[in-house]
Image 1: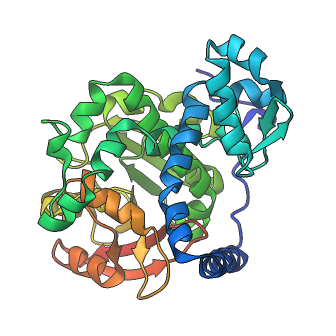
Image 2: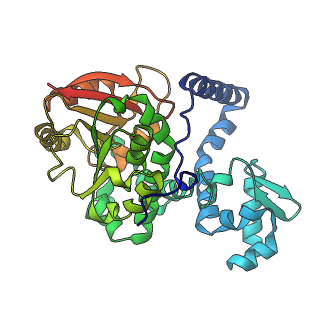
Length: 371
């Protein structure tokens, strides 16, 4: 593997979007949506809100059937598109027409093309969200969300109605779903990494470990932005097997050790300056996090820092509330936590909350130190 790529070949870490304008745009978007909802007859507005799940499935079909990729070069006539992909021409037309009339595709007679909003459905798009769309619209999640009322009644997840094993063993047994899930996590990390890498001053440290860091997109960005750092990437063996090209693409492979390990049930590298864990805490209950967090604390020095990257539920206003419900349905007692709940979790396991750093992404950095 070539770890000495020319600068033009390296994966760029773009500037992080400014927090203020991003938050203003989000508030404006939500205010406009609330206005639209108030202007329509409630009974029809409710129907439209519920029908959004159909839009999600239709967008998932664009990716799953290869339509989005086929339209990457420009608009295509329906019959030619259907022949190319082996689809039923009439049904394909109905799918594309429905999306076009929602402004999600460009319609030119019986030819259709991607709109600026749906361009990221292409797998080769630099900001592709194809795997995330596949993950959110998959049959597994449809099965779980259909049982939300059961979860609300009991307070427990409903995963056992889908599989005897946990999510991870099920994904291991279903390669296509495994690829889509981990691809979705890479896409989410890729889009947030420029902000996460700059929100905290990692550069004042010498070493950083990314616990459950996948194939290294976040750690690669952190090391690229802070060239004095050395890193350790820790995740399951079959996941970190794909880290080499990612780290080489960032030009940081010679500054990063890759370690196969289970961050929840096993030991982690000891004595580093900073430990990062992104989207780990929200998938597990406080009780199940206790043992791994105490092992993390034992591995750390007294002056080490723990950075949890997760949604922090604000006292009021919007947040990723539906992701919180996904955690209710499918995780091992996981949840999105408030700052006070993070403080309680940390205190119970040998840490003290230092501060919460907001970012333009939906997630914040929860910075803690050994107590």
